[in-house]
Image 1 (cartoon, rainbow, N blue to C red):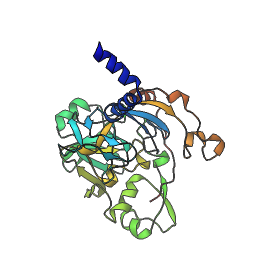
Image 2: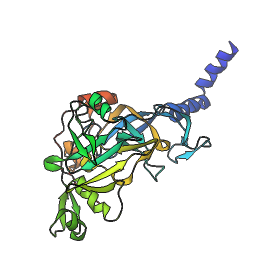
Image 3: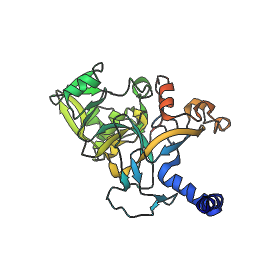
Image 4: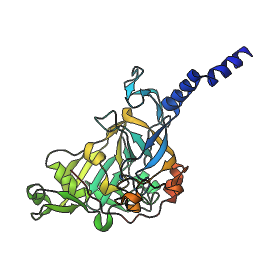
Length: 314
């Protein structure tokens, strides 16, 4: 009885409340807000979500906002306890390469040993298990041969209809210099031009600032990446408005934080197209239909996304 009384007194005290909250934040769930439109179609900017921090093991606790670890990294992978690895198609929260204080949310396109192709007509996956795996798990999907191997085109697009490219080819307005684009796309000189993310890769490739290798086969140019062990290729569902592994490379397990759980609130932000938020009257409206919904429900409820045209700065 003394133990139960002590527990009751501790829980009801300020110290106990703080300890319990910190344990929940450190080991169970933490709140995040989706800041951009890179996952639009599945998740929207302004979605406020709890993230399960135990989905892929227990990460080393950090002081909130300061992002300073409070325990040593005994395993060298920023996890106190290792767990399952992200599966293909999972939506994952992680720290991008080279940035320990920023959190991104993207879909895991490929795992270690897989091969990825980003071509003009879309993204392709070669699972490390080979053709038999493709025949079993992607038998109704379109396939195409690259580099003498068979790849699956957009392997998650049927299950998750929020995955999309921009409207009318997914064009995004960016400033450019003809000396960057001309050799690859035959572009004419202009101050701005609309580009797909595929085109943008060529711009970045000129300075070596991409996460994939440029290849060519039968006159077709594309980008290729073989995923290293215990690494993951993260891509936004809004493919033409997403900074992701195509540009800055793979994400290793040490940078994995958790998996989105459910939304507890959702509001429109300044660049929310569906609310015409450029008008101040329409900003910060509550999206009641998205509140208290799990990540799987949000994906199943998604309507087929027809795309968008958005400004993209480089």
